[in-house]
Image (cartoon, rainbow, N blue to C red; front, side):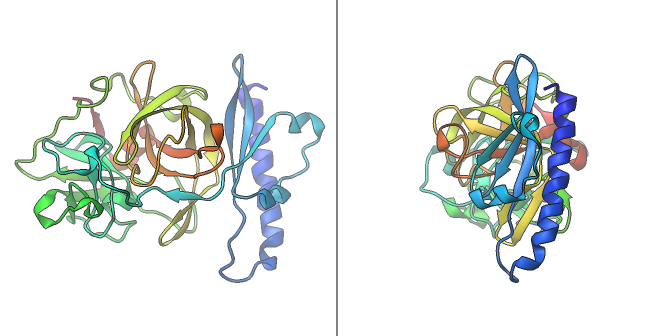
Length: 322
């Protein structure tokens, strides 16, 4: 179907899921996990679009409304398992060591966080700053502005002697409403050098595309602290209702990008904060923050990313390519 028709069907599904979830709320005990359904758009070839429905478990299928036979043929339903913020530690590797000058892909974190990824560099208030997730640099809203940022992160041996910057801004995470981004910036300390263009294939180029200018089925890449340089494919866009498990609880995100790896997983724990770019023109388009370990192409899980244009607008920051 045409994209606008797919968006109308997406809205119908989201409304039906909301009604079903509301009706079932009383059936769940306090503290019992709630069902989660995310809905977006996925490519159908020749410029056409289907609706992507992502379930945490097979039982969540009961929440889907009866759309009729013709509409059901326009829906791609997949079980992807729980989606988690990707900041868990793994064994040390090349991107998990102390590295100067700073470059995208390195291990970074707030002193109370295990480790995440330095996604790239931005300019805010005329100062050079590193970009990553709120849950990496700001400890999921727990940090104060001015808090230290370490490279490498504590899970990779980082200590106070490895301070490279200070937290200057982050977008709050809302437990009660729909979030758009998990993002934060930290201005570099005096004397800390950076090489923003030191990426596989060289600096990223071109303007940052708006969320509506990112097409499903595009090939993409990223470099992250845990899995390094990986390649994937955008499998869904404009995904609403993505429920992400953090240490503090579940946060829901709207207007997200879904990516599947081309050969195995596109990301794993510790890759949170990576900037994702489009392979055909190297345009930076997303900020990686969460993923699952099942579902997706080949069953290796899916990755979710915030549109980078939304991140930059909310943080009042300008992308720095080199």
